[in-house]
Amino acid sequence: MQAHDRFRPLLDNPDVVLVSGYARLPDTVAGHSQYERLGVVLAVDLSDGRVVAADTTLLTDLAREFFRCLVEGLSVRTDTAEMVRRVQTRYAGQSGGALATALRRCLETCHQLRASRAGTHEECSRG
Image (tube, rainbow, N blue to C red; front, top):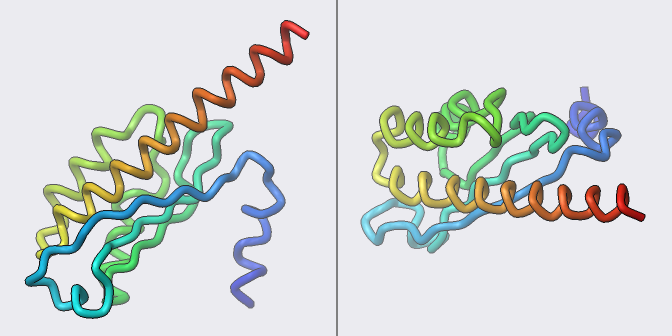
């Protein structure tokens, strides 16, 4: 299966948006010389708030996959505290603080999108 085939259902759903957040990496982290910031990207279905896909710029495949397992399937509406808690308690790498910060920034963007979308729907229903 080609990568774009795997993502076709996400692209075909207009409620799925991609949000990103970044945080500064500590100087002591191996990836700091290559990247000064750590990124987190979430594909979120705004209709129900569920994280349908996740990725991060952590260097190893294992770390990226572990992060995915921690957040995919949870809701940005009801599980934000749980997502952050999982990252803070289960990811003990040196980039953990930056990972949690980048995740929080993604979640903030999701809440802003949801609020702006609610305002747009409210205006449409008044129209």
